[in-house]
Length: 238
Length: 298
Image (cartoon, rainbow over all chains, first blue to last red; front, side, top):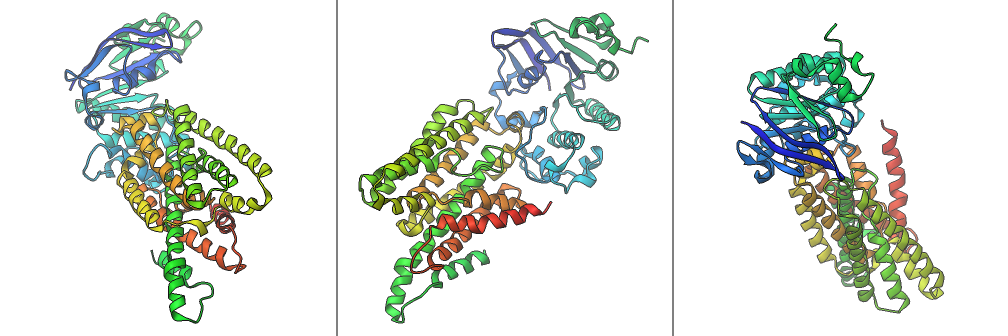
């Protein structure tokens, strides 16, 4: 399964965020997207998920334009973890996680996911009583239940302690080893360097760069991406 | 279910009946029977509409009248009463006022509904506030002898409900339609983007919710005025009691809302018989302590 975006441009108002992006996701690849706040990372994820249309260009899945896929078929193949906002959810954590199985008709098998995200003890709790990190784990479990060939994660590290970041990393690696692709946005260059196969830099002015961490991550490139004074965030070189 | 049956029986036999068996039979079949049926249907429709509005707006405080469904109906009905129209016309005006207000709210605030429900909410709340002011104006200017009728309409009164069969049919149809989309509604509680990524068509589903809740509310308002509190309280209380998923919540709302309104109307009829109280006062008097008691639990 292959997701290809050809010549896509993203705008906000009349400002160009991303200009003429060509991106082909390989099976089993982990791609990290870095960029300043408002550079278009979340917008790009929504476009890659088929939930928003680019101002120009087209995204295809196995040569079929995303816009032509029936919503349920698309949901069986592409999963999205948006930044959280579930103010209206009144049910239990187990109910919340099970919603990830909505695109499928059979009964979900939730059992393996409780241990992966360390949610066993929380399954019976009401979702709205969880802490920020616990909610994020429940969101990740909900996405894992969807079992898509492509997972798009918007700042999945948010609220996670290092132990659960490690669990997220292990999950992403096992997805990649099974031939699935993972795209995530993140702000930590060190995490990006260790864990991503490729990186996409969005400069927020239309410009973008695609390459391996070794090619893209340098103190100078970080200052070009985030602004002056940000080079010390990068510790890999020391 | 049993509680609902018990409430209906109580509704039928509470209060005095004459010794003449034939006359008693007539009162039960032609007066109390239809009234109990109308009360049950109205209560069920309001609770159902409330649950749907709470899902639509991601807010447990949403209720059927939030978008002006009762304000528009109230103003139209009061205008009809001031003009001295008979009840069927007033009822028709109330229905038109209710639907008209909801349509106006949709036209003013509905454009972004796929992503954001706030504009619709704001437009509706503004319309409700505007109509509230106009209702106060009509009350201030209306001839004194018409005021009691107007107040009963504004607080809700089942004495006028003349179409129990229609109302029961509507309750059944709305319950089935809403429960049929229960799984989609569960997903709709997530953020719009997440719901869309799971394959739910967010905008059409939200519009269906809005139409179903709006039509249910308008029917009730046209038959019985603005009976408050059922639509807010019943779904809220049922959620607290563990009915979280829509598949269980929506049918439970129809039953519990109907039961509550039958009980409230029975009390409204009998407490100071032969005079009657507006049933909306009773629903609040029963409902407020119940909700406060439920809130006490963590």
